Every structure is written in C-alpha cells, then in structure tokens.
Length: 441
Image 1: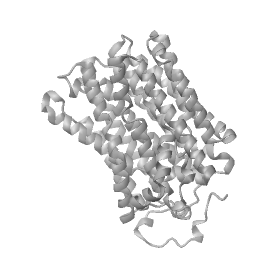
Image 2 (image 1 turned 180 degrees about the vertical axis):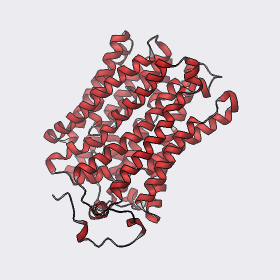
Image 3 (image 1 turned 120 degrees about the vertical axis):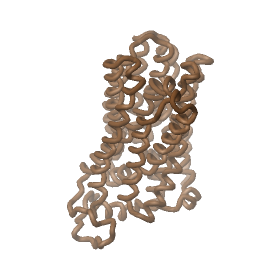
Image 4 (image 1 turned 135 degrees about the vertical axis):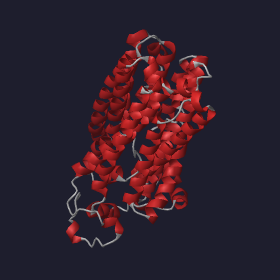
C-alpha cells in the first residue's frame, strides 16, 4: 500500500487553504511524529488540570468545604471538559467545512491554550467568592470544547496507511502522548512541591505549569500545521475520504459502531484515571506520604506504561487488536480484585498498585483508540472516529475520579474494585457484540 503521494502530480489549486503549503513528501514517520506531538501537548494540558484538581483547587477554590468535599467538588468540575468535548467536535467540524482544516486546528489549540493559561490567572475564592468557581468551570468547559476541535485526522490517516501486518504498531504511536504528557506534568508539580513552601505553592507556584501548557500548545500547533498544511496531506485525506460529514447522518448510519467503539475500550479508560488521578487524591487525603515522592512513583509507572504501549503494538499485530483488548480486559478484571489490598497495603502495596496498574494501562490503552474504526464506512470514518473517542472518554473516564473517591471514602475501597470490574465487563460485552455482528454480516 502506497504511503506517499507526489504532490506535483495533483492539481492543488490556489485556494486560501494552500497559501502556506510546502511541496514535499510526507513520510509515515512524519505523520507519526505529528500524532505524538499533538497528543503529548493535549495530555499535558489534561494532566496539569487533573493534578491541580487534587493538590490545588480544593484549597484555592473550595476553602469553605473540608478536604474530601473540596476534592469531590474539584472532580465534578473536572468532568465538565468531557461533557463539553462532543459539542466541541460537532462545532469545529462545521468550522472546518466553512473555513479550513488549518483554521480549525489553530482556533482549537489557541482556545485550549488560552483556557489553560486563563486558569493560571484566576483569582482565588477568597478574592472573588463563587465567581471564581464559575470562571474555573467556564475555562474547563473551554478546554473540553477545544479538545473536541483539536481532532486533525492524523491517527486515522496513520492507521489507514499502515501495512496490514503493522496496524497495531501504528495504532499505538499516538497513545504514547498520554504517559509522556503525564510525566512532564507530574515532574513539574513534583519539583514545585519539593522546592516551595505550602503557602508559596498554593499562592503562586501551582500557576506555573498552566503557563508552560500554553507555550507547549504553541509549539505543538506549529509542528502540526507544518504537516497538515501540505498539499500531500490534503490529498491523503481526500483519497481516504477523511473529511467531516453531517453528524445526524453519521449517527443514523453508524450509531451502532460509535456505541460499540466507545464501549470496547471501557476497561482501559476506566483504569486510566484509577492509576493517575484517583490514587493521588487518596494519598493526599488518607496518607502521610510525601506527595512529591508519590508523583515520582507515578512517573515511574508512566514509564512502564510507555513500554506497555510499545509492546501492545507487537502483541496486537501478532494476535489481533480486538483479541489483545479482550485479554487485557480480563486481566484488568482480575487486577480490580486487588485494589483494596494494595491501596491499603502501605507504601509497598501502593507502589505495586501503581506499577502493575500502569503496566496494564499501557498494554490496553495502546490499542484502545479506534479498536473498531474499520467498521465505519469510509466517508464516515473521520467524524465517527472523533465522536467515538469523545464518548469513550465521557463514558469511561469523565466521572472515574469522582465516583472512585466518593465510593471509597463513604463505602470502602472494595467499591472501586466493582467500578473497575464493571468497565472490564463492559469492554468484553462490546467486543463480543462486535464479533457477533461481524459474523452475522
């Protein structure tokens, strides 16, 4: 299967979308780099906010509540971005039709960076009262809308241009952005916690990672625009029919595939926050461990996840992506039974929970994106893949920190096990249904 096209052989035209294009070939490696850079910048924003929801926002924006209630309030606002994300996808798909892919991405990433940097300038509750909370909520919604608009089609293009025996390998490349973004974000917060007093950290130190997020977004924007503004990239997308389609038409025609795709990776998305955000909140509330040190432990876990993501590509190409996801869902179900023992097992038990959990996350998350995207008709794949990702995050991850912390605080850690187990069961059910429908068809 050809992976590059000669731009000189195509009639590019003189439309505004091509004013800043470059007539060069796009190698698969360039697409992969664009995917990784884009996802790393988005996940960095994501984790800066997530970590701040545990370490900062309860004290800064909810000082009237106790520590547990403040964290639950912060996790409620945390979920707003996932609720807004599908609306951002729909809105920016329409913007792409009327403007261009480049304009859509530029607006989305500046909205993402602006919303993130805006949080750094927010006055505390002590200064503005409930208005500060409202402003935080609006900026969080802005992040969600921007994330929906940041879909550039690169992961789908990369997967479609992969050789048949390397699809699992290419599918995992974009997923490397998650642990990379986490390591950078956690490293920044760990350093600030270590070097600053608690008062300085809560007054101004926590704002620094949000400034950095804006700078990273600008760098990522130019890196991605350099790729997607090429005539060759445009032709690749056109040849693969990776263009926005009517949302209503797409859901009427492909709604079943969207639902199955969102649920197929439910175990992975549920585990995602149960090894990143939830344990940090648990340690903050119920342990005397150094938070800076625990973030370092999580960074080590994220490094293990990176190895797992790479291995998932090898395993998936040998045994199949859906078989890989199904097997990992079973392993996650088994792992769920050990949550209470490990989280209540002192430093050693908690470290084992982090390392094993991140390992399973890497192996499963590496193949979570677009597990059933091949089911979409070509004309619906661009929009269908974006909405499937949005719904997977909404169903699997949006409320995971809130639910896990609320259940564990009021009823015990055993209920976190049940929550994670339900995600694994959901994944297995969706994969089984998808298999049955394929056989029927």
